[in-house]
Amino acid sequence: MKEVAEKCVASARNVAEGNPTLGELLKKGENPMIKKTHYEFAAVIREAVNQLQYYQFGEGEDMVLSARVLYELADALENL
Image 1 (cartoon, one colour):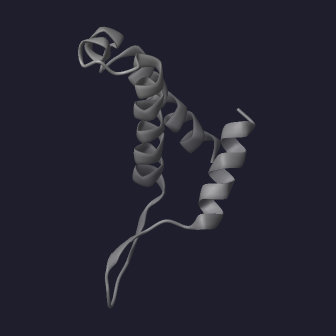
Image 2 (image 1 turned 120 degrees about the vertical axis):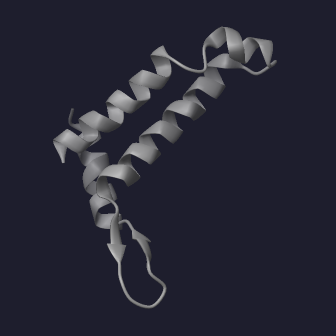
């Protein structure tokens, strides 16, 4: 789980250091620090889904995430 946590942090770091830039957010009239945080959270959520999803086959097939695994990820992030 530590590896997944590290990938989530790396995703947030990529957003913090990359797109959208603070200048681009300022041009749009948005608070760049708040908006950048929103993008970072979104990156972490997307990476968690990419790393932890599995498919449930049968009626109503869909991607599934285990709440237990998400709690384990939260613990791993806190312990990095």
